[in-house]
Image (cartoon, rainbow, N blue to C red; front, side, top):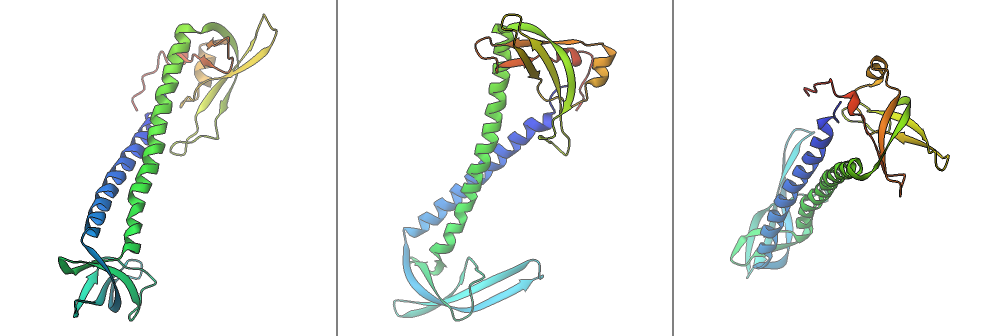
Length: 235
């Protein structure tokens, strides 16, 4: 009853997509800012907007006229905005070594979305991966150094607050009375992606091993290996 591999794969995909968007965005921004080294700011007038494609997927070619050293140029702009219309005056820049090459700094800022979105995805995916790694390390450490107790099986619950591919995992709930403090503790297992009730009944499981940290009872691991000993997970 291993944790669904899809969970770990999701974090890897998030990090991968984020890294890809971030790298692409950085290269785009490097290209844009390198253009600014030879950029000369000026004003231009939209002379023509050619629209084509379906109503759901329209494309637009925008042509702008402007003057450089007394000579008029008409060049295609590499961006489009719904605020554009023929005859509108807009702020543009041209390459002093190639006046036919133009752009708009205000629209260039849109490309900051790529590295921004990429960074967000990278942080989310990377955080998920790190959290999973730290959880596994903490579980291993508790099993090696924590105090072993046996808690009475109480029930199996469905963790409806968490879903992967439309499925929610199960948690085994156990109870234990501390003979020293006479305090009652309730423990919850990690997420299980197969309903353990049938196995618990077949094996007549009454208790589960729990590794606890006496200095911090919130740190514990419910050992559910007994549920998976005879299961081969082929997912």
